[in-house]
Image: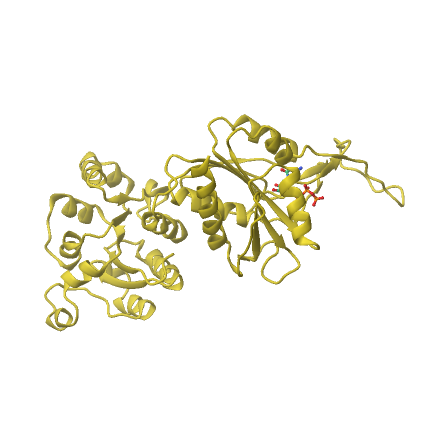
Length: 398
Ligand code: CTP
């Protein structure tokens, strides 16, 4: 999504500058063309050379540097931008912008731009809570500036509180969000992700290799497109996307209860979770001891959440997943029909780049009207976007 986007990254002085170096790396890796403006104080924390090397462009530091102004004047920098990011944004910078002051290259360029501006403040927590600062920030938010709030934690000044710059991956998510058209506003989506775990005893369980990456990518994309998202997730190592309500679950039974408890007002259900089909008939309260040479576990069927959703479908759009190792289209088509789905995402997990715990997928989309779309190998975020494009068509047709 960021491929070819022209981004101006304005860096003001603060210890968090080092994290912005990582943000720059993420932006350029995603294909964005990033131009850096550093305030004088920012240069005290990290040298312009670091940003220059990673961005591949000269860093702009001083409004009155004649040589730089000949090459690119600040107005053209502001004009060409698809997005302006201010990170870290100090109290001073936020104060100046909110008062319409433009006394250096950074503030002048922000004032001259018509691009969306994402402000990522970072400062001492007392400064952040100061009513004057809060008034300035609220004024800017009211004028349409995007604000990514700082997070809680131990601050470099020795305080503990809200003021830390969010993780670069979180800022990156906010950048994508600002640049994404909000075509899913008003749509309520429930997504399931990850594996389920069926306990045998307090130390052992039955599960599968699902990482949750596909479901989390769909949740991220839907949130960025303006949807209200509930993510019901089995155990994963993934970070909950900003703005998504995540309800963690362990077993299939728990997932079943949470899904049906949250169905009210839901327009779209996307079941990306790899639900364990069976669970032990009895869960041992104590750790099972190694005694006999052989052990047989009695298993019973878990509820099929998607089948039941299909039976109580009403006017919801219902999307399932089919991860198969053979006869992909036959199995997926059977599930589509048996579970009363609108769409099923089928992938052959034996293919390179399509299995569990990788960042790519190779999928086919099978529609209820018999159409089959074959998508090339792409990142799970791209699959998520394509899938949501189809979901939106189905939702609008209901
Ligand atoms: N699913 C579900 N509840 C279950 C099992 C599966 O909701 N107990 C959902 C999955 O989230 C997925 C779809 O059904 O969207 C297909 O899951 P899959 O495991 O591929 O199919 P099953 O119906 O379990 O059939 P099989 O294991 O025989 O392939």
